Structures are given as structure tokens and as C-alpha cells.
Amino acid sequence: MMYETIKKDFPIFKHHKDLVYLDSAATYQKPSVVIGGIQEYYSQYCANVHRAFYPTGEIATEKYEEAREKIAQFINASPEEIVFTRGATEGINFIAHTWGLDHLKRGDDIVITQAEHHANLLPWQRVAKRTGANLRYMPLNTQTHLLENPTDHISQITKLVSIIHSSNVLGHIWQADDLEQTIAKAHSVGAKVLLDSCQTSPHQKIDVKKLNVDFLVFSGHKTMGPNGVGVLYIKKELHDDVEPYQLGGSMVHSVAYDTASWAQAPQKFEAGTPAVASVIGLGHAIDYISKNINFASLAEHETKLSMKLYQELQSMPEVSLLGNPEMMKEHSHLVCFSIDGVHAHDAASYLGAKNIAVRAGHHCAQPLANLLGVQSCLRASIGIYNNEDDVTHFINELRDTITFFKR
Ligand code: PMP
Image 1: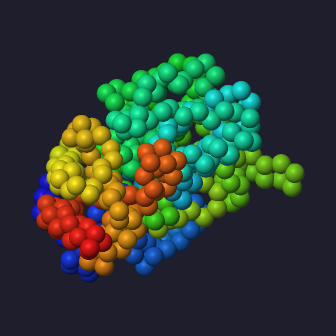
Image 2 (image 1 turned 180 degrees about the vertical axis):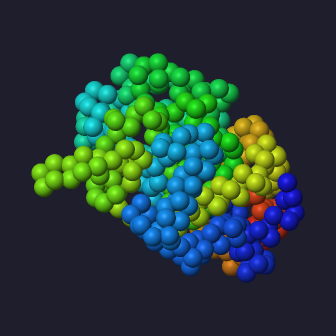
């Protein structure tokens, strides 16, 4: 893989030659094939899908369904198991408000981790309140920043385990084979498993069969695709147990004034006009990843840069790092840290003025930030287009930032 030349595929860097983009965990930059694919849809065959009997409409439907096939292949699912949503947030809300409200009841346990993004916490808080189920947390060790004996928190009353694949604050938090064991134990007690793969989808191979999950979500925009599209995988065996999240056009078999029946999945899960251009754009992103990325070599590239970041930051006395360095050495794409006496927002704006893009805040994981005793932190995250110069430049400017605020 030619990491030196890959930046050329991402037009943002032509428009901003000195941009040091270290915020791919928030949203990935888009290769020109994705932008071109969207433009092609709007300029050459713009039409609604599944309802047009003319050539451009047929092309639109074909390309939309082709994207579904590519994404299915990307995560080793069948096309009918792929549901297009607005993003990972909508995917989790979908399952919470359909399967969750329909199947969970007083006395059941919903188990999540203490490191969840709000998107995989708030929907379950609501489901717990509405159904009387208990929301339980697999604890995070505040020293090691890893989950502590996660399987101990699954029991005969666990009905759902909804967990982050990799944390958007700490990176990998599952030790050894804890994730596999957790999924296996959940199934052994008859619970369903939802995996939030937002922070893994552009970084490692996702195989829903190997993972053996019931539901999985990720966002298109974090996977080199456009905004406004996400993927919700629903295992085929569960299609009859999951009601449509929204009702309307395109998802019915037949409708009368007083009754209705649904189309087969995935149509029954996709009411209304979908984000056609974004879905097609995501199909192009998956093509780009499949053609250009070897996940083993990407992991090496990302880990090398993350570790360089980690080591440089470790040498700064004002910096406190989050995450587990031993886990990071294996595979990482992000580093979170705080600066003693400098608010993360101030540091991020100062860096931003120098065209260095990093994220600052609680990263939509406020309970986790509170647990770790960090009010707000900075996150630098790596994408395929980053190189050692980006890291060096960022570290030099960060030194300057600290000096500026400490004056
Ligand atoms: N889960 C994780 C781990 C995330 O990092 C994010 C995005 N920051 C989400 C869920 C929500 O994704 P989106 O905002 O694209 O719906």
C-alpha cells in the first residue's frame, strides 16, 4: 500500500495543502471516487429507487442494491441482512425502539459497558425506564482502562448485551478473548448481542459470522462514505422478531384502511425514500477500501503512527494519557489525552488556527469521562492518509500550544 501517495485520492488535501487532519474517528475524509459517485447519481441517473419504470430509475435501483451487496460482502453478511439507516445512532435506536421495547420486560437485564458512546447508552436508558428492565454495566478498570471480567455480568436474566467494539476514547478495551467470550456467554443464556462497530469499520475486517452477533451498526461517514447513511446488520433469523422502526412508503406488502402487512426484509425496515446518493456513495467507499486496503498492513501503519503519538505525548510532563498502551501496541488508531492546566477546547482552537484538526470534549461519553475523572480531553485519530510528518507537525505545534497557555 502506497501510504505516501494515498493523500492524493482525498481532494480535501488539495484544497487545504497544510491541513493536518487528525480527526478521522469523528469523520473520515472522502476519496474522490465517493464524491464522484454522488455527483454521477445526481447528474446522470437521479431518480427514486424501487418505484421507477424508466431507465434512470432502473439504474438508480440497480446501483442502490449493488451497494447493499458490496456492504454485505464487506462484513460477510447476506444482502437482506443489511438495512440502511441514517447512521449508527439511528441503527441502535432502531433496535432499542423495536426489538428492545417489544421483547424486554421487568426483571430482564440489559448489559452494556461503562465505556459506551451516548448512542449506545441513552436508547437503553429509555428502554429500561419504559419496560422496567435493569440497565447494568460491565465495569471498566480505571487504572488499566480495560474491561474487568465482563462475562461475570451476564446471567440467566440477561436478555441483551449491547457493546462497543472499540472505544472512541480509549481504543481497544477488551482483553485477550474477552469479547468472544462475552458474546458466547450472552448466547449461552439466550441473550441477543448488538455490537457498535463505529470505531472498527474503517480499521479492521468485520465478519458478522465470526463475531457471531445478532445486530451490528456502523456509520458510513466514518468509513470513508458520505454523511446521512449508516448500516444496521440484522441477523436473518431475527427478521420476524424485529418490527419496522418506521412505517410508510416502500415497506409494505399490502395496505387497507384498517390493516397492513409488510414486505420482506430489508424493504420492511426501510420506510420512505432512502438516502440514495449516500448509499451509492458508501458503495464506492467500500469499493475503494476493498481495492486499496489490506487491513493487516493498515493496522501496522495506524499503530506505528499512534504509538509515535503516544510516546511523544508521554514525554511531555503536562500531558496525561488515556487508554492502555499495551493494547495500543497491538492495534490503535487514536490517542486521547488531557493537558494539565489547559482546557481541551482552548488547546483544540489554538491548534485549529494552525490548521491542525483534533477533537476536544467528552467525546459523547460523559459517564466515562466522569468515571476517569477527566472533564474534557483531546483526541488525535489516524486515517489512512496520515503520515509521520503529520504526527511530527502536530507534536511540535502542541508543544507550542502548551507553552502559549502556560505563559
Ligand atoms: N458509537 C461510537 C463508538 C462512535 O464513535 C460514534 C460516533 N462518534 C457513534 C456511535 C455515533 O455515530 P453517528 O454519530 O455517526 O451516528
